[in-house]
Length: 111
Image 1: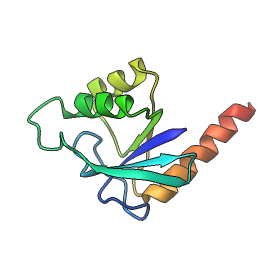
Image 2: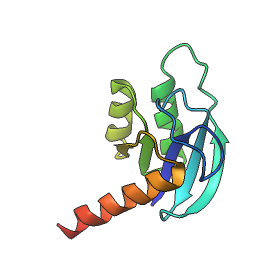
Image 3: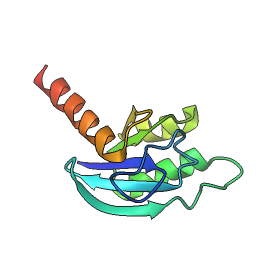
Image 4: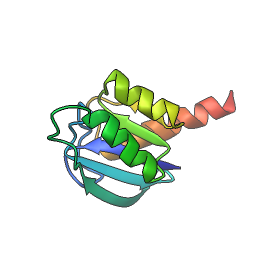
């Protein structure tokens, strides 16, 4: 599963950003552990609609889950309508957020 984490830097040790659309970076992780790439957010400084633009960009990259501190209602709707799940993580590093997300996914599959 391809996971995008809104982050303050390009590494697994970077911290989760508080707002999806305004994140500096997106760290793309495959299978919960392998860093595929880190991309700078091209929409960070847009005046409006940055969350929706980010959601569409991540969808076009094959992302199936987005982790962020928070996201606006329009970005959340854009993610959900494309089948991308959203999970919120406040003070974790990218690595910690991904591990926590994968544990929750595993738990929900067992039910």
